[in-house]
Image (cartoon, rainbow, N blue to C red; front, side, top):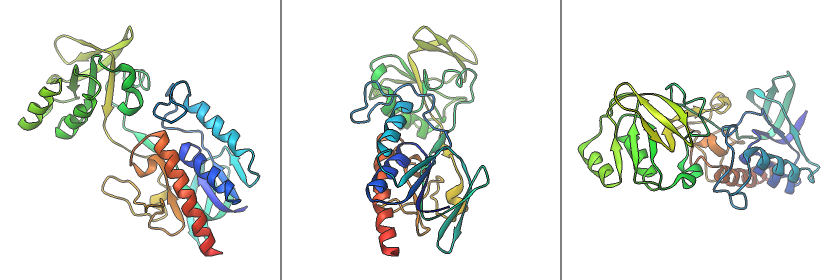
Length: 298
């Protein structure tokens, strides 16, 4: 099987790119593994026209329905396990063993957050333990919040961002934080208290969660925001030779093209702003660049 463009990833970035390429009358196939960074998230927020009651699953369903009117776009619920460069583009291998060749390739494979290793965090993830304040903080604004991050100034800076939504914040980590005097003074003005005890576990209590430390009294918080970094959900781009930065993010041009000609990367895999609406925009931008790339080849 050969197509003009193949898209690996069926989230907002991949589906948005497929929509634009479909409108360009391009022969496109989208591979969706069914694995999503926001799989456990109940609602999408900050996405224009979908801010109130749309779940990630519903957003994908709406997008797929939009794609049905374009006969040149195909959806395949399969995982791509291998990708390699060939003379006329790229060759992909599905988990089922089928090879697909394409002239241009878009990787929209997403990002995998590093979750807190403390007990109870996994069970409360995407409900009371969340990574993105832009997605979830407005709903718990002006309430007691917790921040869990690295025990240094970088982690403290994340707490400083969360203070935009509440002036009752406790910043904690698995180890005793080592924060500069200047940062400590700044956090104090923002209503952030640095917790020196090690956080060992969290458990649900009422509408929030209780923080349990290595010693002393526990604390109740409405929600806990965490930031511990993470990694690309797929290594296909690096295996194809795409250049990455010191964070492991694929370096892309304004049109989302990587250092490998014909290889484009969009969405959370580029680790810019990890939001669905941004991913959708990057997917559209990549599609425009892919169409131009294919026009030059022709």
